[in-house]
Amino acid sequence: MTDDDATEPNEDVDSQSDDEELTYAEAGVDIEASEAATAALIGAVGESDGDYAGLLDIGDRYLALATDGVGTKLLVAEALADYSTIGVDCIAMNANDLVAAGVRPVAFVDYLAVDDPDETFAEQVGEGLRTGADAADLELVGGETAVMPEVIRGLDLAGTCAGLAAKDAIFPGSAEPGDALVGFRSSGIHSNGLTLARTAVTQDHEYTDACPFGDYDTLGEALLEPTRIYTGLLDPMRAHDVRAAAHITGGGWTNLKRLGEHRYVVDDAFDPQPVFEFVQSAGNVSDAEMHRTFNMGTGFVCALAPEDAEALADATDGRVIGRVEAGEGVSIRGLEL
Image 1 (cartoon, rainbow, N blue to C red):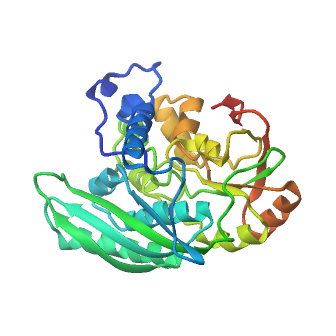
Image 2: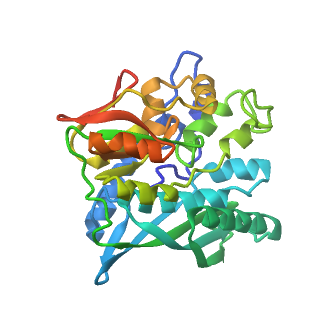
C-alpha cells in the first residue's frame, strides 16, 4: 500500500530550524494515523490485514487482486511537466505486491482522474503504463478517465492488478527463525515517502535545480526515477522454495515485520543510492526516519532456508543481506526499528 498520500506539507515545515530533524509526520503524512485509519477500514469491511494481495479461490487456482496509486510523486511530475514515468510506477506498485505473495501478474486496469483533460499528459501517462506493462509481462485490459474539476487538482493515477497462481505456488507467507534474507536492489526512492522527500528537497532547492549526483539533469528527475518491477524474480524464488517475501514500500524496512513475528537482522543491505543521502542532508532527517520511510537501496526481500539462499542469489541479482531470528523487531545499520 502506498502510505504516501496527496497531503501537502504543513506550512510550519518551511520555518524548520537548521538543527531540527524533519519527520514524515511533519512533512504531512502521519504513518501511525494512516495505519489506524486503515485498520478501521479493514475492520469495517472484514478484510484480512497485512496481506499484499487479496486471494479468491476459483477452483484449482487463486485469483489475486492488488490496488495502489502513485502518491505525491505526481506533484514532482507536474512540476517538471514530465509524466512519462509515472505509469511505470503505477504498474510496479501493484505488480510487486502480487509478486510478494507469490502470484504472477496477468492484467491491469488504470484509473486516471483529472481536473482538466489534456492530450499531452494523457499520452505520456499511457506511454508509461505501456512500458510498465511490458516490464511486468502483463496485459493492459482497460481503464477509466474521470474529469472531476471540483474534486481533483491536477491529476491522480491509480490502478488494480490481477494475478493468477496455482494453489501450491503461493508463498506460505511466514518466515522461520534460522532463515536467510535475500535482498534485491531498488532503482531509487520508488513511489513511497515522496511527501518527506519533496519537503526535504524543496526547503532550499527547486526540482529544476541541476542534480549534483548520478546521470540526472535535475533533482526532480532523480525523484522521478521509476520503480523497479520484480516480476522476473517469481520463477527463481519458487524454484528455491522461498517462504515469504516483502515489497519494501510504505513504512520502509518495517515491512519485514509482514514476514511474521520474528526478529530480522540485516547486516549487508545494498548501499542507498545518492538520492537518499541528498534527501537526508537537505531535510536533516534522522537515520531511523529514513529507514522507516524509504527502501534505502533495497526494494524487495525474501526469506528462505539458508542452504537455498546463496543459490537464489547466484541465480538472480540478489544477495544474502541478513537472517531471521527468534524475537521481534528489525535491526539494520545499527538501528532498531
